[in-house]
Length: 288
Image (cartoon, rainbow, N blue to C red; front, side, top):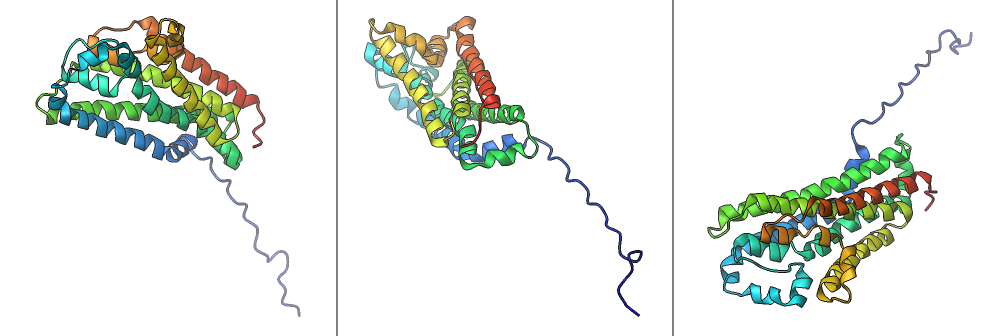
């Protein structure tokens, strides 16, 4: 007699359970991991520069910065038109929150935003993201949210560093109302940078090229601010720079709000750029 089991004796096949959909915000988390070096470096340098200014502030008071800033060329380079006081907050604004903040830390955030989508298209990992399943709209919005988290991290480190300055160094004091209003201006400026970076990233398929192009936009904004305020003939250029509308350093120094209308210009431009990037990304071919 054959020992082969009959069909009735064969074990029944148990259907496997479908793998549950991944919860949470996986694209946001992955984007932050990919950008952690850039955002971490920006936070680190904000922290170091802020503490260094607090450390050398007594020496800075011996330098007549007013005469330097009254020079139109120097004032244009740092994005400050006048220095009305010699307080710690004024020197901190000149050294850290002038137009160099746009060039350095805005440039870092622009590169991260510019590379965020294009990098995944270039290396083919975007197909894995969209197969989770994640729609193109959700993927884009999570990328956007990740860059805004990076923005908040940079500004949070800036505020915490300034608070540490007031605790560590006896001569360091701040008018927190105007200091935080200045950071509101910085947030508007960086929001614009993120929106432009995402627009470029949605249109290109190479991470470095998209990040570099977004950084060039920031460099152009800095140069437009510099030459537009340094020369009467080129004064029209300053309107092309986000820093013209949200001069954070001057708000902290002069304790005068630049106006809600100006504040909304880079905010609205960044929103329009990001939404335009969403439309492009939903319709484009993502083949690298």
